[in-house]
Length: 258
Ligand code: SF4
Image (cartoon, rainbow, N blue to C red; front, side, top):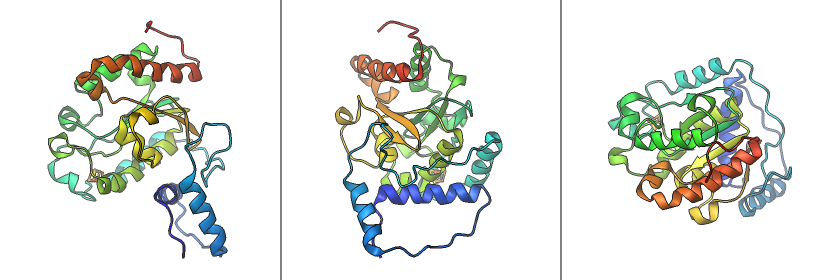
């Protein structure tokens, strides 16, 4: 049986979880020719990230069913997470940081994982980096309550280290389900960890930024993590370029000049 590449495996897991959430638990395999399945897996692995021209590489380009009760669907995910011990990050956490914001948001920000303040308060981006993210959102002419904010991992890594690959792989299906429920028009990946996990690519920020990606029917842009911008404020100008690209697509008026 051909092996699935990681990107396709993630998509499959997310899709199965989505159906489970819809109450569909029984799945039947339809026999496929082995060569055909392998061909899809290989072409997907080699494909360049694409602009949203309608020629997406996703296996699942067909529209997802619309979820009418988004708060209930998100609550079901939170209940599914429970008092999670699925990965080692549970050991040091105080609070699971699920996500916050407008369930009907056009714009969703995805960060890496909670820090100390977020762990304390159980809400993403509430520390200094969160204040900067709020300023970035305000500069776009929006309020924090207009957008949805979540992270790849929902528990704080010890000493704020970068989450390990297996921790991201264990936790990110919850994020995928959140995205499929909120169905934003644009996702902004904050930093390399978020970008690499969402896009299943391993590339530098320089190469990842400045272009659109197609992701679950949304457009995805990559910019710097606010914590990085606090360390290197010179890059704020570059981040603002990324946000302006998003604003243009969403038809948002510039609230401040660059
Ligand atoms: Fe569970 Fe995610 Fe926390 Fe790991 S990071 S323990 S998978 S909620």
